[in-house]
Length: 94
Image (cartoon, rainbow, N blue to C red; front, side, top):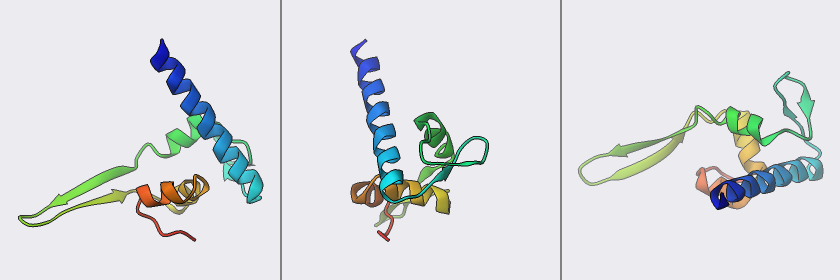
């Protein structure tokens, strides 16, 4: 039960953060109907990230991880979550 509460709390915080960032930056993202919105549901945002993966390339002396399948919309959404999210996804800040 406590895991479920924790998951719902993270979901709620993430939804609040993205909606607040969209409002502050006066930006929108497309919803399921492809209409622009300032108040997307996190379920939709999670679904947009469905194909994003981490590719690990290993050689004898080197190991490198790359985040793949990030389109411009997803990069913009990551940017809305702030500099730490940009760092996690290895993206340059705008």
